[in-house]
Image 1 (tube, rainbow, N blue to C red):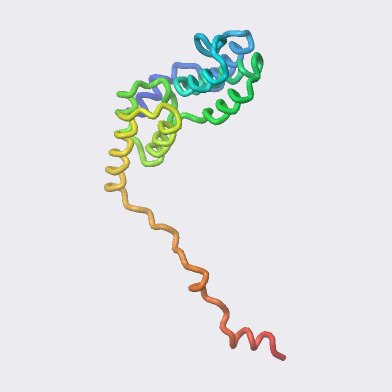
Image 2 (cartoon, rainbow, N blue to C red):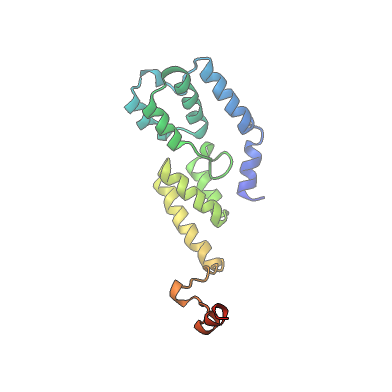
Length: 169
């Protein structure tokens, strides 16, 4: 059993993403705060604090902000921050669990983790492991051929003789 399948099994008993979204939106509609102390923070403080929260909490913050305060700067930051996790339940994993999952991940997953980490948590241990595992995967997997490039001047143009024959009677 791979670590990714173990993680999926571990979190399969959790409510689905759709039901989590509905629950967080319902909580926000009922006036529940997205995270402790949210109502005491000004817009600048909220935007600074958002990077410490999971996608589910960001969704709850967005629903709460839309229904209660409507601060444009906060909504813009939330729009930027919202995105899908690199793999299911990523935000719920500890750094050690992420590092273990990276050891078995494919290049596409590694790239998604790198982008997600850079945008959100920016944890040095995770980013160092991403770089190391990415280098080792590239050494193992054959390089994909880049598409053939030809400058415009090298492309074959119709010969002048052929062009003259077509235009003549």
